[in-house]
Image (cartoon, rainbow, N blue to C red; front, side):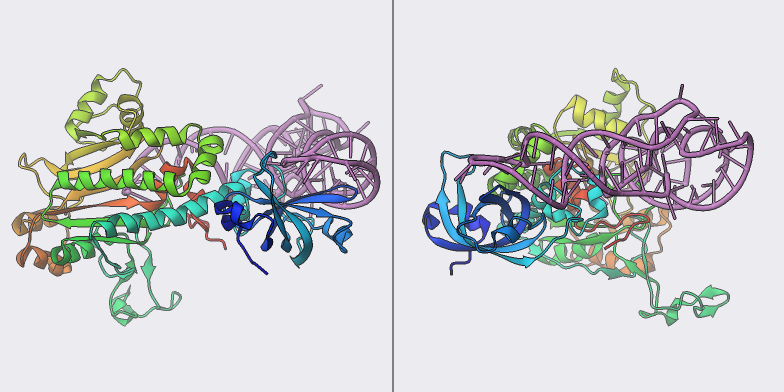
Amino acid sequence: MNKVSVRQLYMSAEAFSNKPITVNGWIRTNRDQKSFGFLTLNDGSHFNSVQVVYEKEVLANYDQVAKFGAGAAVKVTGRLVLTPEARQPFEIKAREVMLEGASPADFPIQPKRHTREFLREVAHLRPRTNLFSAVFRVRSQLSFAVHHFFQERGFVYLHAPIITANDAEGAGEIFRVTTLDAINPPLTDNTVDYREDFFGKKTNLTVSGQLEAEAFALAFKDVYTFGPTFRAENSNTARHAAEFWMIEPEIAFADLNDNMNLAEEMVKYLINYLLEQSPEEMAFFSHYVDRGLSERLKKIVDAKFARISYSEAIEILQKANADFEYPAEWGRDLQTEHERYLSENVFDKPVFVTDYPKEIKAFYMRLNDDQKTVAAMDLLAPGVGEIIGGSQREERADILIERMADFKIRPEELQWYLDLRKYGGVKHAGFGLGFERALMYLTGVSNIRDVIPFPRTVNSCDF
RNA sequence: UCCUCAGUAGCUCAAUGGCAGAGCGACCGGCUGUUAACCGGUAGGUUGCAGGUUCGAGUCCUGCCUGGGGAGCCA
């Protein structure tokens, strides 16, 4: 028997026309009548489902099939019939419908509208809904697109460590990694003695693979990381998670402009990739999740991203005819309301903001000639805010050491990082792209918890 | 962490301090082409938890828990 996926049917329906096939999947809806009925069957291989027609005079178990509930798994054997005049392009005339796994009446995903909040509580079952079926197939596609983009350009993919002893990145609160007994840890002078811990020192989950990526960039020239990242921040927003994935390219012999060019090229590549590879899903998002999404994304591909300096941004904001809760002021970080105003009102497309005051950015960012700003860049996208943060890195050892001192980072903690400047150091740059933020931007899904299979956030680690 | 809104049937929501309800879903029945089918009927409740005020609390007060939205932090 020819076992096929629903995707195969949609890809080449003609080839299967009138042929006997077997499809395995889960019932979305079951509508029975007196002598025949219809199953909507989805197997996850395609956004769309396939309609199965079953008839009393064909199926010996008709009465049982008519009672199969939503969520039940079945194996359907029958003949594919093209139905160009009907609402669906084809259907399966069943010769046999076998129950593989029953689903009682209390199956939570019923054929009715559910809120995202409710579906989060049944995260193990929500992939069987239209929305999450689309989201997670696109998530898979987008991961692949990221690799495609960099591999086509000769970048080397680097697996940065998940566990690290770097405590100096300043990228946020960390999760401690330890095997010590939490109730009775080894003490020396009344403080926990991490020399007795697994690694013989304090260790934590990574907050960024950047420092390691820099080491590899200064060997392979163009590299990227793509892996999980952990932040123990007590953030309670729709765009923060404790565990998320980040893409961090790092390019050598390159400056901030090269960096922005790469970021812009990548964002456009990812959009194009999804529009081509996931047309059904993107059409669904554009219709039901964020109206007009596809058209907006297409416009972005053709647009030149705006680029302004932080100082220019402050000027625009100060002259703006807008009622900000906090007025823009040079030296202070941009508020969310400022970022939104810039990306949504002023430019209505992604905008790079560059050259921030050194005090509000990380120690490794390259000091500009004005001695007041650093070669940093944030990409602000309408609707989701900051999706990329990056910079040209400080390659001058003496200045880097001064900057570390400003941030109270002892050089011996990052001797290996300083070594990179000592031995063949060269100008280089890189950025971090929040994978989920990109996914939110590209799908129109507005809560990060709805683009992560099993999200981890403050006070929530279920499943 | 702060501000704010909410928590009542499986889900989404009503209910002036005075009998706890509807729609959807489920279940049962009907229907010869349905497609988030349609028509008729049935069942379904510790009103988030713990106290308090009151003759009487879903409703008012206090504390806690959970969730949404916003802010900060950031990707």
